[in-house]
Image (cartoon, rainbow, N blue to C red; front, side, top):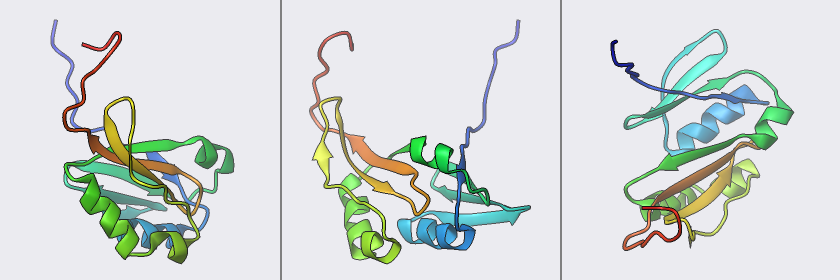
Length: 131
C-alpha cells in the first residue's frame, strides 16, 4: 500500500467586490501570483489561498482563516501602518495572548471573512488533554 501525500491545500475565499478585495489582500501583505477566470492566487511565503469573484454572504460571514506567522507583532504593526481598518472599513482586533497558546489578532476582509493572524505564544504550557 502506498502512502498518501499532499503538496498544498488552499481555500477559496469569496469577494463581494473583487477589485476591492484584491487591493485589500495586497495591502494586507499577500502577493498576487496569477489570475484566471475570476480567481486570483495570493500567497505569502509557503501559504496561499484563492480569491474568487463570487459574492457568497453566507460563506463569507462564516468563514475563518488562520495564518500562523513567525512574528505576529510585525504583522500587527504592518496592518496598523497600512491603516487597513479605516481604508477598507473593516474590523481589526487588539493583539492578545489566547488561552490555547496563540498570540493573535483578527482582521475581517471587505466581504466579512475573518482572518486570525498569530504565532505560537512563547513559553506556553499546554494543560488538560494536550500533550
